[in-house]
Length: 602
Image (tube, rainbow, N blue to C red; front, side):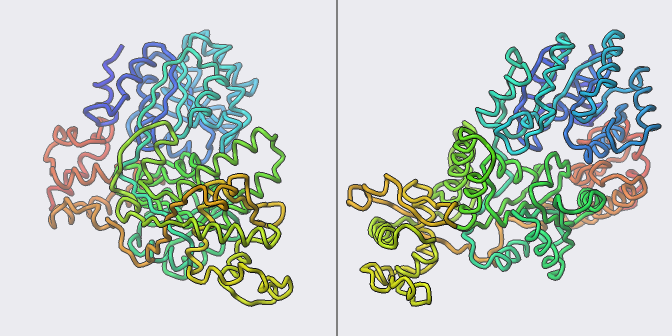
């Protein structure tokens, strides 16, 4: 067998493995099954690409995202790896040619969609390849898609157990960046990976700064956040298609290169918009969760949520699309009480069984607890995935710890107002009662005559909203989605009303829209002096032109990190180029002369 480290350097241009990559590669290359949990940007792809090159035959990679296979294959071709994909986007002739290359041993890696892999035709090809000893391994990417409790469930993934049943001696490696303990167990069970070795890396993404703000004026808040990210690539997530369209149009009016993406757009528009996001620089994609899984773009500098995600798994995966290159990135979110009502309503009205609804409510509660956290957000997020860590000093609660106050009396006033109004009204009406605000609805129900009318004038609306949210998180209140968000008391409210418990609540904070983040796009290149920065920009221009000529994303040619190393090291020979991370033999041969000329000219 070839030396894995030699291949790592000669093909991919890296001198050393990261984390558990070496152990995973050795295990799979030697025929072992593996379940790999590794954060986005942690180097999962190498964990199956290298073993496929080390073992005889072709590695079959199951990927749920047809749109991204082309970019993944393009990146491998740039490194000199014989790769191809097989999916419904190809015409008949192209598919037949790919099958021919597969069966004649001309491929190292083949990416295939799960529904194509499960077809009788393709399984027949695998049978023939197996007889010829031409199967290197099976890689099941985005393995969390097998989980029926998960947010990206794909029915075809459950059927992938056929690989173990048909080809038991061919190693399998299942990979995901997002899986809590129940999801991991389901992956193992559904795919028959009980005997597989499990490699669980830290879920921490230390380069991502987490910030959550209470919704006030969302467009103004978003614009203030984006002020530090002009000309940067990013994603803005919204809950509804209508909000996606409106936000994208509004951002374009503010001078951003913003595009919408949701399932209501036709397939061609979605394809063009995704391609522009991946291949152009500085595009902001405004999207529903229909966009993003498996996005390979390394230089996404921010992910913003204008609405509350339904779970911490979803939030972790969506924010994980930022900063895949290891450079500073931001995860920013604004949320409000209405988000809770909408999500609870969706859960209650879904066709899921009661057990699944119970699990989804627990996931939503964990998401709310994260938003209302008084301590380090990263600690809470990692704790959810079973990982213990100290304060990160790279989230809003670490940078500006929220103040706590004794909210017991305020809670009692709120609970009393809910009881005296018959537990029939939403948060807005209860706040009007507490703050003594006269309006037609108050007059209609004569709630101005209640003892609780006006008893909460000492607190502003933002504080009352924070009280309600925190009592919902604590399970003292619940929002009845069936009755338009009516606030009702739970059994836990009794102890509060009787004064048997003290409630320390978090004061609402206004992280102002104009607040500059701890870092900005300009600081990404702060380690470069003026001369190096000029060369860096020259190399970026060359890369953009080369990518456009080839019709591939710029990062497929070379990552920003490689360009920075070139600008600093200024290699003078092809041998020197080989010492730059990300430049293997194929890229040195293909681009070496052009790069050396550009460097010499500076």
